[in-house]
Figure 1 (cartoon, rainbow, N blue to C red):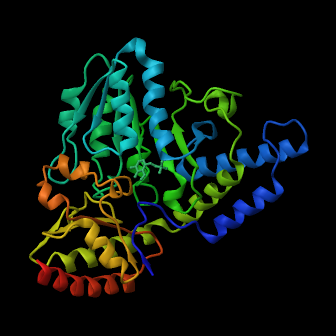
Figure 2 (tube, rainbow, N blue to C red; figure 1 turned 180 degrees about the vertical axis):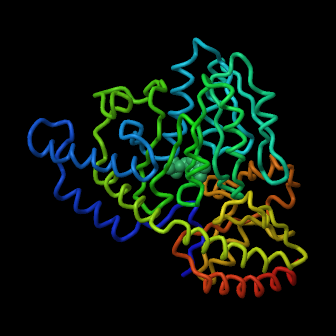
Figure 3 (cartoon, rainbow, N blue to C red; figure 1 turned 90 degrees about the vertical axis):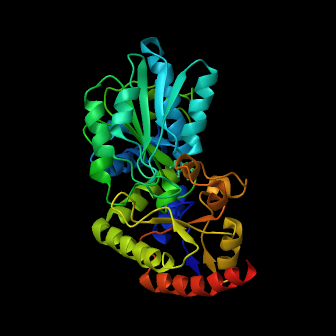
Length: 381
Ligand SMILES: Cc1ncc(COP(=O)(O)O)c(C=O)c1O
């Protein structure tokens, strides 16, 4: 089996599952309880928080646990909108965001907020000049992703940071769900960013757990009201087994990160340079440094993305159409649309997404199967 769909989700690591099971069995107390079971659970909760804070270079109080990327995105956006409404009602984001960001913005539009969507170039990236031009006295939030989930474009975060430094009051949120463990930490945790969202299941932690970095001093309104957990910002009894498992997964992910990133980059290029030789292939994530090491999106003209996915599945190779969210709903890729890719070719797009365990042998096997399938598709068309 070759699993090349890691941007949809990753397989939980055995060590991580082990931590989950051990914490469930041995630390079942409620961290808010006053007795020893509560205290043990609370200590483990804060140890996990400290471990994550250390791994990403943040302070203990800047790490808040969430249920994943969707919640983190909703919270950073709606929580800012609620906290800063008296200062303005203008929000800025990009045309290529995940639905968790896009649809949060659309919901806020219904509530009277004004949203500017920044356009992207042929590589799916916004321009810092467009961002600067879009900022108004009423702007309260800028939300930009780190790595695009459909094509792997890395947004120009250094240039965006340079603009944002001139507007210190505006909140800046980065959706880094696809960017963790990909050699981008310096760009993501820059000196200006205020909120960063992460999702555990994208890096071998269980589903339903994630975390948000919130710069100290930045104000955000809670979306979950209740017992006041997470420093009064996110109520609900903490999912301690998943939190401890996520801390473990993050430690494993970031161990020897540079070598893992290089390996993914080499595998991506081995496939890219192979498939680009075929005349009916269009590459959307090119061989350029502006693309993340683990995502490759391409189309085979005249063959629907679903057909390509199922054809590979016959060979025990698992890839996807451009994103897990859109793949079952037959929604066109919003990123390719924003890049002004013709609909005819966008419907033929597929995505390969790697993790640190994929190997060059798998890439070779993929390329061999690709040759066979390409010939079959050519005959059919
Ligand atoms: C860029 C991006 N943001 C947010 C999400 C949502 O994360 P979750 O699945 O944890 O809700 C995803 C999931 O694919 C994503 O790729």
